[in-house]
Amino acid sequence: QVHLVESGGGLVQPGGSLRLSCVASGIISRFAIMGWYRQAPGRQREMVATATRVMLTNYAGSVKGRFKISRDNAKNTVYLQMNSLEPEDTAVYYCHYNAGNGDTYWGQGTQVTVSS
Image (cartoon, rainbow, N blue to C red):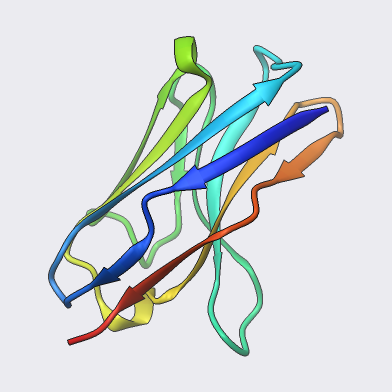
């Protein structure tokens, strides 16, 4: 079992920045892929960015060049640095943990609102 706790969401103006954090606790796999998904009102949940333990990363096209995912494996933490935020980035952001054996876990979500 893995428990995920996110933090760092909030309200920011267009062009601003936010940093999300997600701490994983429990039985942590060294093969785990950690990442971030988001869900805007009326839309399906979509992948934002993922990273393996050795920082092989994958980004959604809409965030490439603006968002950066990173991990601190010693702290079982994944971060999402979001720059040049746009109103279209407004969504609930969810931390995701893929153990690599078929088990997956979600955080509770953190709201990000980009508005002037």
